[in-house]
Length: 77
Image (tube, rainbow, N blue to C red; front, top):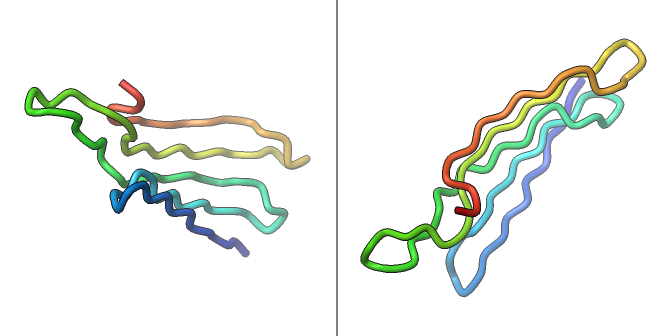
């Protein structure tokens, strides 16, 4: 059995973060995904804040963190 939760952050009407959390039956985090692309600061396309990412976590039989994996796209550049 697993569950999920979503956390949204909006600043001045602009979505900065939409995180989706996935949990296993003992509430260990299995994954975190943010699908919001970075906002752009100016006409030059400089990145201001945010970025899409996907992280996953695996646990051993004792529910200790055993491995992680993740990818990011323009986070806090």
